[in-house]
Image (cartoon, rainbow, N blue to C red; front, side, top):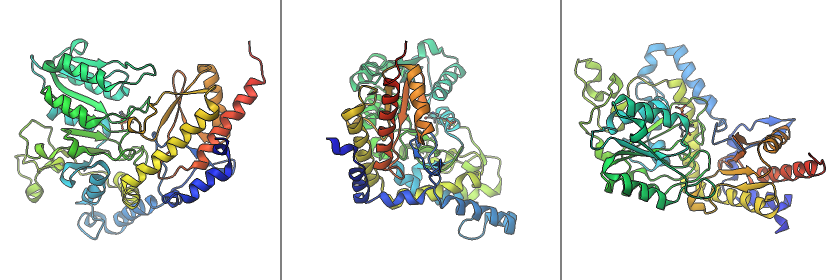
Length: 430
Ligand SMILES: *Cc1c(COP(=O)(O)O)cnc(C)c1O
């Protein structure tokens, strides 16, 4: 399969790809005068060229209309969150009434737990993955403590049971069976940030619900990466950010899903005026009447400038279609896997599961020679315009984002790994 490494082969694959043109809708950072091979879409997605126009529209409206901008024209601010509603619903597989853009990811996780983590002495526990993103663990642990329970016994972390640090469905099932009667909540990622493993979300919901627990997801690494089916999977709630695969810019306003079955829940919640029933919100009465659906969890009028770039990004997701985008993503990631398996396996070991159904865009690559060599390889790649990201102690994450990465980027990565290997091989170390 030596043609894998031919420039012509990679560019033919790109030329034949129906979604290749979307790359032109993004600003690609440059390095030494040429486009970077940017693989950090799992950390900060690139800027859609149209984002600036949406932001400038807000600035212009503010300059010209000031407070009137809340109520005038197509981009009026009062119902601005509604401009992203349908696009978000399509991206995560939800009904429009089940999604809202608000706050930030960790804040939304806390707000969801106020309503959906209701521990009792008989059922106090949360089940989560060991090695979760730290913010999630901090949030969950602090919620357990806030309710007067003990994280040592009531924050249950399922350990990886597969050799590369991934988790089998059997291990999750076993943990839910073992702890089921004590579980108040199962909180799971759609895609694990470090290993890139994707989970069978519908099955996790089914198991969690069968045990009597609420089931929520953190989709930080899944939104914009996999075609999610939040409604059909039956998740109780989900939270995610918009600055990773969703390309809405640093610190962009985050996303939140609440299943339709909770649209009119009388569970407790932390309330704010923007969650109040919309028709009567401006009567400014003393009693909180929640608006039905996910929008009932809003606290404040949203930062319009932080929402504006999301409109640009959602338009691109809409144009591509999540399923077509996923098909392209599978092609790109399979090509990366093939390049590695053909010639790079003496250097890199793929930690992410090999089956497309168990991963998203990202491959996590362990540098076999260890941390020191890994840092050196990572620096070599960066010096040559190939940007992945580094996870201690020895992992490089490469995430080909299907909206803007292409086969040529991946070939460039593989070539630089080969170059580095040739250089370091030629230099005996002791
Ligand atoms: C990126 C990420 C976060 C970051 O949280 P913020 O509140 O957006 O700063 C949290 N959890 C997970 C799983 C993430 O991937």
